[in-house]
Length: 374
Image (cartoon, rainbow, N blue to C red):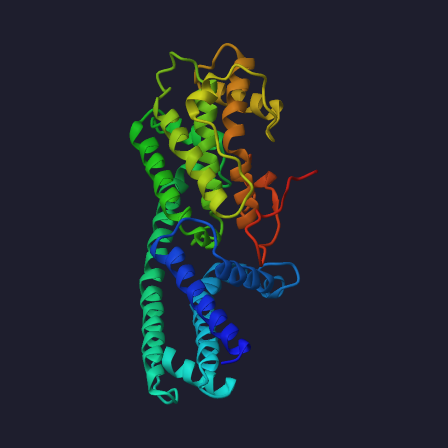
């Protein structure tokens, strides 16, 4: 064997191992984020289906981005394994590179029309066939898992849609729940907390779900999540302590929702810092942090809540400070995801979404995020 043949075998083994690790980290033991192979696939499909000069601009195919990426991923795995084993067969002197490709493809797809010359290499064809069958099995189990998580997400959005309004807003959600006598009911807020917990488990593990289009084109899971967090923050900071409709479930929604939306945004590649524990946020006595919601917008919301007959906190400045502290802890995650998913405009969320750059082909750098007006 020449040095070139040895290098080919080493490279082929490395490529095959990279595919196995990518498949395991994507399907079997998902940890969030993208592996090197999945990153290249998603970045390539993004250039075709999402960006301004791609097919989406002509035919409105943005919704195909995530599904096509997931279908292309097993094809990419199979292609890399085929090329990797072709290098191995060529390095072990099966014949020309074309002959090695034929043997590798025949083995991976269990076609059996070609076999390596030396009988000792037949074991390699068995190994490659086993890898090919394993990739097919992973795909068969992977797609139903993703659809189940996607269906669970959309189910939560559908259950909340009658309360959120069109477009969804924290004030409208409060108005409808108060009008129905459900503002202080724990059941609805507990359901929202459970939905956030489910969202964290699925979308942080499989970040490609973030780009799955909503079943209802006018709906958005990001807007729903942001509206729930804004409502809980608004009510907890603005309602008087003795208001009978003030509920500890508001805090529970924040306790589950803020870490969940932050973890999902981080897994999707957004540069989001880890949030402080909610206990520390609520006990903070520092100055009012900067948020995208103005004091005038907040005061307008307080006026609408007071008009509903709710009892407001007497110190409006303290209410604003607490709201801003809570909003600051999840704002970047919500606005970044709104920009990433191209969510339809809604007050306090997607109407001020961040502009998110395209995925990188190589490296694990965070996506570029630009705030409006910066």
